[in-house]
Every structure is written in C-alpha cells, then in structure tokens.
Length: 411
Picture (cartoon, rainbow, N blue to C red):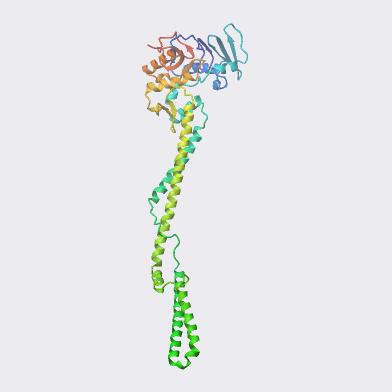
C-alpha cells in the first residue's frame, strides 16, 4: 500500500494541507524552517501508528479545538481525530464500510514507519547496532554473550601474563623431593662410634685373655672354655657389623654430613623448580580452557547470526557496532550507507510501503537519485523533508499551508 492522498488539518504547525502524491517514488516536502514540514510528516505516523505514533506533544495546532489527519491508502482510508486530550481512529474500506478494531488492523500491516534511513547513517556505532537489533530477531543476548567473552578474555590475558613470568623451567628428576636431615646423620655417626667402641672393648678382652693364657699356661685347661666363649662373642660382634642394621663407616658418614647442606640446597632449588613447573602446567591448562570457552562463545554468536534473517545481505554485528560485508558500517561509502539503510527501512515496512526521511536537506543529488531509483525499483514511496526557499521542489509548505502545486521532485 502507498499513500494516494493525505489531508492534515490543525496538526501541530499545519493549518490545512491536502496532497495527492504522484508515482515518482519520492514525495518531497520543502519549505523554510518552522513552516510545518516536519509536522506534515509526523501526521502520517501519528494517524496510523497507534500508541507509538501518538507520542507527539500537543498534536492540536495552537488556537484550534481539534486536529484531523486523513490518510488515503487506496483500498482503505484512515482518519484520526484529536479532541479534548483524547484521540480516535476510524478505518474505512473503499466502499465506505467501517472496520472494527481499526488500530489492530493498522498494526497488522505497518512496520517500522518511524525508521529513518538517513538518520540511521548518522547514528553512533552503538546506536546503529541497537537500531538494527530491533529489526533482527536473535535467539541469544548479544550483550550478555559479549560480556562473557570479555570476562574470559581478560582472565585468559592475566593467566597468559603470569605464565610468561614463570618462563621455561627444568627439573632434575634424579634429585629426591625430601631434604636430608643433619640430625639423623649425626645420630648415625654416634651409633657408629658406639659400635666401634664396643668392638674395641671386645678386641681388648680377647687380647687380655690371650695374654692371660700366655702367662698362665698352667691354667690353660681351666680357662680354655672362657677363651672359646670370648672368641664366640667376638665372632658374633663381627657378624653384627656385617648386617644391614650395622652403622656405616664413620668416614662415609662424616663426608655425608659435610655435604648435606649443599645437597639440601640443591634439593630445595629443584623442588622450587618442580613447584614452578606444576604452576606453569596448571596455568597452561587454564589458558587452554579459556581459549576453548572464547572459541565456543564466538561459535555461539556466529551460529546465531547465521540463523538470523538480516534485512540486507552482508549486514552483521561485531563488538563495536554494525558491519557491512565484514567491515564497519561507517567505512562503507555514502552511497552504500544510503542504499543499505533504505533497504533496511523497506524490509521493515513490507505492507505499508511508505518511508519517511526527516533531514532530506543533507542529501546531495546522488543521494536523492539513489533514494528515488530504489523507491521506484522496489515499489516504495519515500516522503522526504527538505529545507528550501519558496521556490523549492516538491510540495512547498509555508506557515502550515501548501504554497503551490508540486514542482519537479527529481531530475
């Protein structure tokens, strides 16, 4: 549906204007500032836009009792009246029959009539992203997904810095983890000395008994048994010294004691490296886990965007804003930005094929040509407001009224 006729009476700055657009695709409303151009375009949205369209402050012109807007859509006519702080809408078919639940009917075929493609090109990156999100249905929360990704990325960065600080670590696996005890070695030395003293006492006893045998040959028979007993005890002592429980050589123990601090220092240093190596391995594991988490979040986002139906092929999002063909939308040419924004507006108004542009004065001749050609190609009607003197193009508004018949809108 297009607007084939528009009548506005006492709406905001408009006194009385009646327009029947041609089929050029672009309907230009021109005139000086504060003459009623914006009010005329606002009237369209206010008439058919329901609650959203009726957020206008003081719709009734100063000094009037009521405001009336009639929008002829060909097969139906929409009339909205504001009076005494209330508003009422009526929708009639071509043959004059009145539709029940008129606003419900209007809501069923109007889209984002308020989406201004030119205004979209001037939004900040974040605002463009929010505007596009209103047109695209996603089954995920992009902001929450981005928050999770930024959190994981920051944690991974910290872990990576800590891992880099640890550096490469080598551990001597031949060294034990437990340090040697000097007190234990001293105890072993004491035990070895006691064993040696006992051994010497036994040797002295044997020597004593041998001397006695030499001196007392006469008593040899009586002392023979005692000599054999002493020899047996000596043999037992020697056997004790040979078993595993016998203390080590005192010389070896003294050497161990002398080197124990050096050995323990090496063990402590090696254990420190071992702990560092374990910490590094733990950090590597956490880093790898976070890397997988970030990749999973990116995959979730990529899959969601792949499932989404964007109004224009090549549109997308990144953390900063809207992208087009993989690059920031702001880096696209002016012509591309206008074409893409216009296509977005068209996709959001599939039934009522009407779009409005509030700051058409910012369009150069190329921009006007692009909009007019796109409107004709896709069977849309674009209403454009332009600031101009009385000799402006299109429908010229002065002091809330139509000044003259429309001039040529486009070359």
